[in-house]
Amino acid sequence: MKFTYKVSPTMKTRQSTQQIMFLLTLGLMAVVLFSSTFYFVEYGIDYVIHLWSLLAVAVLVAVGSEVVWAYLLKKDVLAYLKTSFPWVTAIILVLMVPISTPLYPIAIGTLFAIVVAKLLFGGFGHNVFNLAGVGRTVMLFSFGASIVPDLITSATPISSIANIGWIITDPALVEPFLAQFGGITGLLLGWYPGGLGETSALLIMIIGAFLAIKNVLDWRIPVFYIGTLFALASIIAVVQGIGVWYPLYHIFAGGAMFAAVFMLTDPVTNPTSASGRIIFAIGAAIITILIRVQGNYPGGVVFSILIMNMLSPMIDRFTDGWQLALSKKYVISMVSVFVVGAILMGVVGLNMKAIVIAEPEPEVPDITLSTPISLDQSATAVKGVVLSSTTEGDFEVVLVEIRGYSVLEGGYDDALPNKIEVKINKTTLKVDSVKVVEIKDTNNIGTKVDNPKFLDQFKDVDETSSVDAVSGATVTSLSVVRAVFAALEHVKGGE
Image (tube, rainbow, N blue to C red; front, side):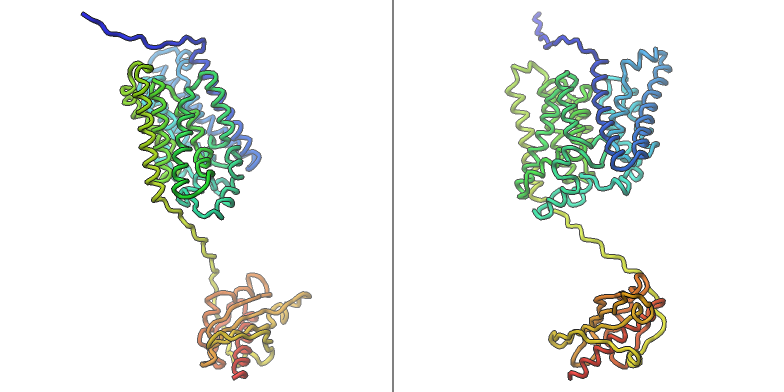
């Protein structure tokens, strides 16, 4: 009988799982401290207290769940916790949510991540999906309405660009858009609101490099994930004719950098071989950018991780074998996956269109009309002064200066008259439109006359007509009527 066997490559290391998780926890806490500093400087101590309250709740729920689990299984609780590390999942989950998240969703998300996604699968090292990703997804679908940015922290980089279709084709709009986040440099430094871990891309890159040097994570995953994101976003940029800021925006904004260092690198839920992890990272980047530019969720990072977690066993089977002997096969596979992604991005890029968000129409306050004013009786005491008169075809546009409330009744030392523009049909000698050019009367009282409900009454009126005054602004209303009468008299006298 012939036996065929192979010896897997092995490497001796002095580093224990406890040391690895300790260094990972230190890296996560560095991000927490940066986020705390940002919210303290920009928004005050209340936000920092809430951040640490979220962290405390998540850690207590995570640790408490595993303590109960260990007790039910009649295991040594302290020994169990030393090999389970529940706080790591809790910290990562907190860093994935915005500062406005209430305490109860983070508690439920943590409970689901620890109990359902981890303990029911067999505990540490047996989970199929990224634990924090599962918790965040449960929170998103169950408490989406309550986990939204508040009025202070609503303008995040991801939500801002998602609202305009993930592209800006007008070069004149790029600089003011980036300026609200301090430009590309500001995105790199991370001094802007978002998810608590969506902060300094520069800090996370430094932490990632440190963890890679310490063999806490496999450098291939963040490098190929971020590199593929940059390359695919660059294809969209070329197709759309926009600058290099676009791919940089994709990797610096949102949770891409945080996920690349702290989530995708989870050794339990990604493939075991080096070639498999590269394919895993490339696939996650393709899904991330597809969800961003074509899906309903602006981030896309969490879903890409969970989808690739499902594909990890298949990738492991595909890359099973002697890595050096099959290196050509693996390289071809990696290139093929990237080419598929590149073709997708080219097609997507051709069909992307920028969304033009119209400025909201200013709200016009409601007014009440009351006492009628006759035009032919309005000029018995005060007459308007014609400042100019221009002809526009069959119409005469007359600018009239008229004393209003501030001059007649207000008694102000610096009181000034109002200016009204009246457009009159020279053939019919009827008013076509009235426009308030300057209103010097009391704000929110006399200024009520600059309202379509009042001004539209003058359409087709003549010297024998009457209009209703604005309730509470009778003197100012009278001044407008006198200006219209003066304009009619001017046009009539010129005939």
